[in-house]
Length: 634
Image 1 (cartoon, rainbow, N blue to C red):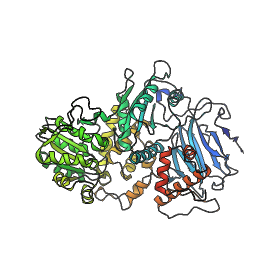
Image 2 (spheres, rainbow, N blue to C red):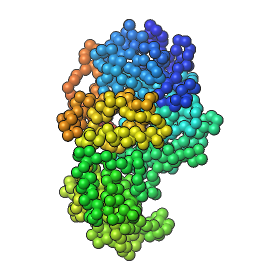
Image 3 (cartoon, helix red, strand yellow):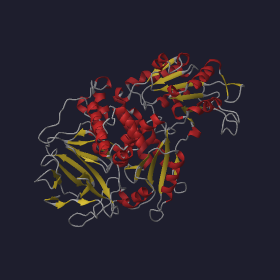
Image 4 (cartoon, rainbow, N blue to C red):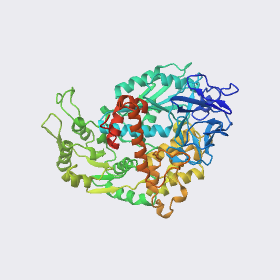
């Protein structure tokens, strides 16, 4: 369809503006590369079964609507005549809603004005447009937005837990100055269409490899690192695999970044934790190990110091990311065992058939693959401390063996009847309700009572708002040193947003957000636009100053903020209904989307999964969760 100021262009054709100029995107490209980068930015959408593309020219507003006077017409009744305005300015894309009836949505939130990253999807009425980077030939580089990739990883976590399959994350960074379009094309050439890529600040990308184990992930990482990108430049890759490297998205992304930092031109691929190295010697990490205690945490710190001198088991209970490992380290280093080893093991990351071998060791020939005698965690930590993270995930057999260690200080290796005596302090951590699990039979009741001599409840960050600013400044300094950036502080407006956000990922999520902001910041101060959309959507005026706690209802609002929060909008003539619960709308929208796609694909799950861009297993799982079934008449 023609518009009054141009025409639609197919993504397979060269894409230029009216002057034939190639425009670059500054965000996502290192400052040293901005003059040579060949990334061009366009809006892409599907219309009448075809993918349409419209290039954005710098500082030239593009109004999208369904008729004149909009510059870009899309024949859809849910659009207003002048629905929204897009501007590429200063290397960043902005969208302004022009008072439309059905709204403009970014990450499920209705916005009046917002900054959009490459790969982000913006929904106008019932029309989804993607901001995408193009190569020199006009082809899409198929990049995702960071928030969209985060949701994909969370979906992949759900699928992986349900089907007990691994997946991998890569963090890829450039080791020297090359054109942005060049290294991204090289990276994409090493990947399959199902692999998802999002830019991460300046000169780096995050890659999701669904249903990929350690061996295949390592092969892909090596292929990326070996691919020439011009001159002496190389791509450096950090490679991690779930569940070995962490149990949630924040942990996994942080582990991948840390692995990438260790990569070098001499060793271009660095791996994160593996199943063979399930135990980790706890060490002080200045980026993680600092304790900043506000009013709510002072009582916790005092309790930890009181129990540190004893050998009584301690259970640290709190949400993921609240700092349980930091407190476990404090217990160890404040007590008489501080000169001995502290060994951490993530109980949820070990395959169930290897848990006993990991904790208690095995004899040669005890099982297939046991080629030599191996000490376990408790032997390695004799005289010191064992930190059992996610203890609620221990299988019943391992629970019984652990109970014996706690009661008599002895155990037997797998494949041996000889008892081994040890002197070990046990500190356990969990985000689950062990008491309820014991009552239901999911966790041994006698083990629970033996472990829970002292239970320390750690409040979530949303109840410790007086710590957010000092924690943010602490993480800012650490991120600046790690990334070679000179960011000096946080703007008051950005601090207000940090204070208003509910932090479902707690301190670990705050650390990730600050590191990302340091990486993408264009100046010496972190501004609101440097924060992720989910944080920018927080509402400072709804936060109470009393006790540092949030106002009633604040948590549920922010937890929902990362979800698609609107059902399919009504036509322009019939405004969308309002007032229904957000989660219900999201599930209704997703169920309808799956149903329509399956119906269009003749109820072929393989074809529907291809159209939706997800693995067949994920589609099957979501169908089961949402109750989407093939009609009996089909």
